[in-house]
Image 1 (cartoon, rainbow, N blue to C red):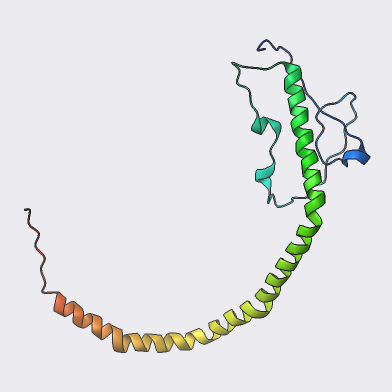
Image 2 (spheres, rainbow, N blue to C red; image 1 turned 60 degrees about the vertical axis):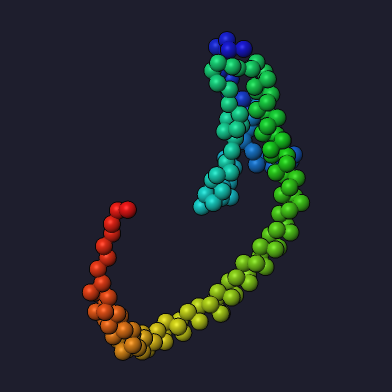
Length: 162
């Protein structure tokens, strides 16, 4: 408790069939380490989800637990996090992929076949509307505000302290 002198590097090696190399090793009895995991998030969309044990649990230098407890807690945290991720993705991945495929397919279709033709049509008509709008404002709105400005220009506001 606070008297540790050796830094331990920990890693767990899991069988390829059991865990499919999707988690970095935590504890190791031998020096067998797997190759790098292929990156499935090339654009770092979920960079904020890369949370490890040290990001969640931290002991200040004034209070340390036993080394074995710290290593065991680290291993349990990583294994439970990985196990629940596997369970939830097994249950939810295929249905969510199906639903999101439908949603993005509909969005793409609406964007391509409805929204963009409407926007392009509006952009084609806008120069004509701009000419008509500027003529209307020059004929109706501009004289009105000039008249109001002249009428109200002689008004003076004086403030006094009570």
